[in-house]
Image 1: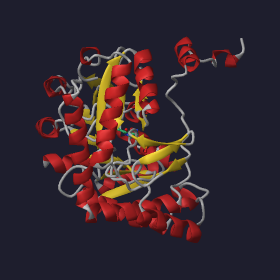
Image 2 (image 1 turned 180 degrees about the vertical axis):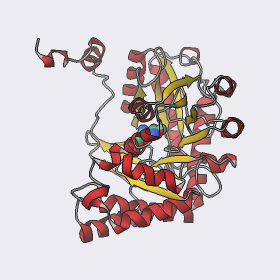
Image 3 (image 1 turned 120 degrees about the vertical axis):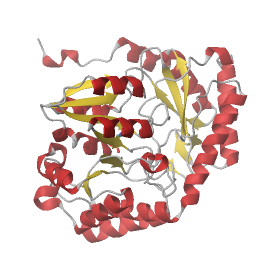
Length: 400
Ligand code: PMP
């Protein structure tokens, strides 16, 4: 049998392509300053970006990247361990560790790789307890590791407590969660989780991809927001910081260990100078301009209350991402198409990214979205939902 015979699209995806409502891989031609992009020659409101603080197009962030690109070249042509460590990486690691309140940090080339880099912490005699909604990269990391993996129901700290009670006291215990969940936009109950960890001698590993830069008085993320301390934290530069790259932060001995064992860091080329310098500049803006956080959170609040006023079921919260659960994947893609027709580019999320029967449109706002832009977004949602005959009761089913 030809090994490539498996390489065909599933009938569902084929039907989606044929229907003209395929919502993936849409090329963006230009990115404008005010939260808009050009798609197919047309300006549309970008309501699917994780650039929450609108830093990807910030002149200071871009200038820092351009300057580093000129001085140090387009790439480093090697791994951190061999020839690819720049002085800039070390500066960024020191700044990130200080910002996040950890002893040390290790910079890698994506947030995905930062999560994969955790896998050496999941040893054969360990029990890894993970929230059921953790990101794909954390699941991959758990699979690469050797620990026994048990998943607890999303944010169900009672179940987490029972799993810890029943754990072999000889096993190293680790708890893995996101700070602000990427699809649902809700927060992990970190006070309860860190309390349980302290009681059971477990370590807490937090993925702060969506909350670092956004939450907490200093923008340090969900842990700061809750006044909780976690042992190890991963961050990505591709959301609040507007560029790409990632880091693991934690105790120095953990970071030194990962530098020598984490295969995603050891065997992959290091983060280019332009992205490293852009991240350093973005970190400076995050520290200096807390009003950006307030702006995006205010836009998110207006979006949530506007959707609720339209009669759509919106879970409480304050994340800049707001899921609208549609349920049926085909209907979800038609809603995505109608939104695009109305000048809004949103995210369609289908199984297996979300549980079966919980296809959803994820709307997100950034600090670039004015109240007028949010009003436009709401108008588009109202028109698109009405055109599809989605009476409020038909769009829903609670949180995914
Ligand atoms: N963790 C979470 C929770 C994420 O949502 C993502 C990206 N969607 C990542 C990690 C990976 O980050 P990156 O895209 O920067 O590789």
